[in-house]
Length: 199
Ligand SMILES: [Zn+2]
Image (cartoon, rainbow, N blue to C red; front, side):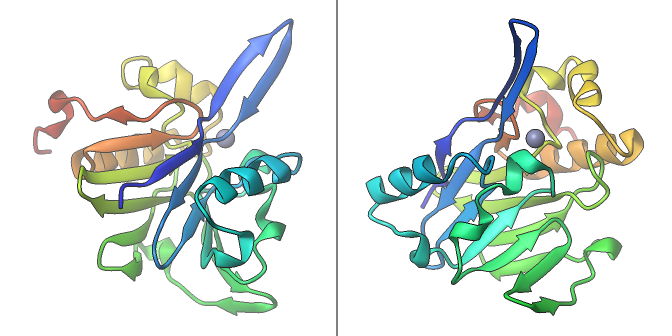
């Protein structure tokens, strides 16, 4: 099944206040997966959105956070039956599982869903790659801030980048692999053909 955007991420300045929340995505299974759980104040909204998909928090098998910033991990606590993947860290309760994301190893959940390391925004960022009817969707967190940063590099750089060099490399890698991108803080977009040239 195609990934479902439960909440579309945004980032904007309003009346001199910077406001941001992340894209929150559901992959219906089994296994059921939620990617990025917004801020700690969004629990009720997330539960309601899951209810509309006939799911409760106990039906979620994996929580995946693309990185450890507060607007991406806020409601992880809701999902007590799930395995939690936060950047490079994989755990269930107090049990931590070794996985070599650092050396580029992907974490395979099913033959259609995998988690790949895409450092840049933070050095432990991951992207969830999902194959479905419409093609390959990359749920990238802040590797991409929003569609406009394809043509305006300042947008993703100003959102913060622990390694601009790595982020640039991983952005092009994901654009070559994916048909659709769900960025951290904007609507889903189709990858323009111009990014499909090999290299
Ligand atoms: Zn973010």
